[in-house]
Image (cartoon, rainbow, N blue to C red):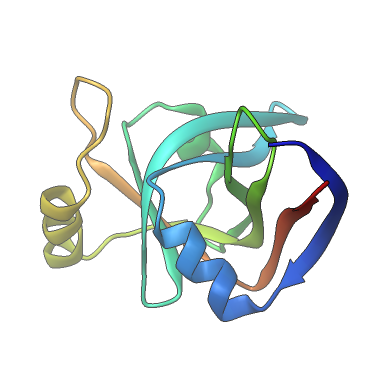
Length: 139
């Protein structure tokens, strides 16, 4: 397929969060040692929040404080052949969950892709959501 005209169209918040929930891999962006850091993580979207699991001592756990650390989260689905698809970027506050019942629940429903102990669960609010779809018309 030859793509002629390409457009980047903004997506509404609801559609952006739906698309974010349709994939399980994203990237969390945070500050580590006063510099930007990016880590690939798997996630779920539930009740307007992004939830990830990680292990004690990880850079993201060290960066998240009790007041809600501002982070960015990005996920996309771009076709490698025609380069069409979507991208969603979220800016929100990340906090460690502390309720043992909540933590146990997410340890069941959110299975990490990495081996090892992943006892910590981080919730990211979806304060700012920007979604885009890259579309094209056949030439």
